[in-house]
Image 1 (tube, helix red, strand yellow):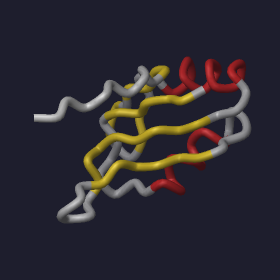
Image 2 (cartoon, one colour):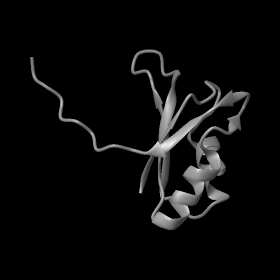
Image 3 (spheres, rainbow, N blue to C red):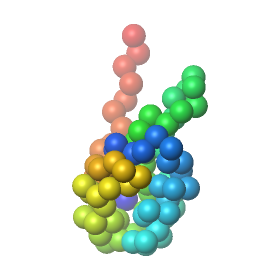
Length: 86
């Protein structure tokens, strides 16, 4: 299951994000999204967990919790919308 994590502390990196979710099960990947130009965190990321039950437990436990002084939003990621060509 692909999980969206919003309102991350800007100092968090992908390993910090993965570590927070590993407490609930296996993590295939974790990525904090960064600005292309500056390389700085954009304050959100995605975690991929192979086991849906573990992923749901992580979402339930972490949504609204505090990470690094910020209250994070955690939910199942929606499928990516195709970009319009303009």
